[in-house]
Amino acid sequence: MDKDKIEFARQALLHLSDELQLADEASQEAGKTVELDQTRVGRLTRMDALQAQQMAQATARRRHHQQQMIEGALRRIDTGEYGYCFVCGDEIDTRRLSVDPTITRCIGCAEK
Image (cartoon, rainbow, N blue to C red; front, side, top):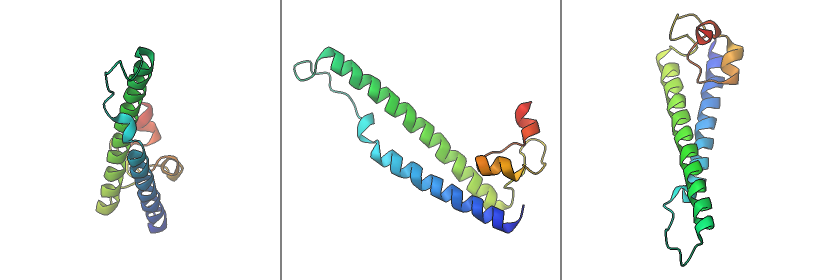
């Protein structure tokens, strides 16, 4: 993989990381603990709030996992291992990496 494509991947990863951090900051309020005071909030409203809280926490977990994948890809760029399959060691197709720059397996190994 040439240096221009690697630098493009680095910039895409950094941009994606920034977007994830902004989304995480924006959704901090949704994951907070729901009050159980029935005098202030009805039972159905509280159930809706609990469901929204669970969805926000699941989304935060997915963002955290994606952030870890990005950090791993950036480490691979720094060490010169970016773009190579973890399983077989072959070069990953650049079209595959352009779709998801955090991919760690070539199409052949991913299908197994």
